[in-house]
Figure 1 (cartoon, rainbow, N blue to C red):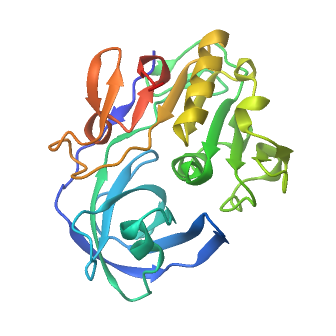
Figure 2 (cartoon, one colour; figure 1 turned 45 degrees about the horizontal axis):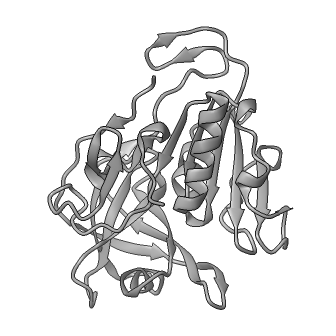
Length: 271
């Protein structure tokens, strides 16, 4: 079984500057979504990791955990959805403002054999099926980061939204399948309603817990490896406060320090 990789990091908040923060989606009752671009000269981040973010002028005490969307040439990008006071401040951040970042935090997506049978640990048996990347809402962010370093022939991307899709411009159309609950784009309904994990050699997923539970159950039935990135409320981001506990078959784990990516078969979802 492949294992997720853990990376060392500087846990202190470091300053950055907002370069751009365009709102790319806004709907009544859902709040806005922006692509926050920040200057960063700290450690390199990898797909699956996240940062704790807060504006210097912030009216909230704690940073907010946000997955990395991209990291190129000293610029970090994040997909930020307005969910509460802290994330609202981030969505409304203005270019030129100072922002504090702690990270990169958490583990990364595991290395799996590629389409030629090669992997980080050496050659393996021939593999012909692609990987499936399954994202729901802003859960697409850590998967988009991963897709940017993958061969386009080696993955298929499934993205689910309530309504109009967003943030998918970097994906080749032949790699992308979209579903919307209101039928405004792509398939009407939710990704698990039609997704068949048996067509893939492994599944990586991030999004709302109900979606992840369905994907995990379907992958277990098909005997397909599945790794899920969990979205949990966090306070410290480094495992000290135990505020983001995840129940697993190995006992309680910390989403921030032990995750956020876990083998799906280990996670015990709440009823």
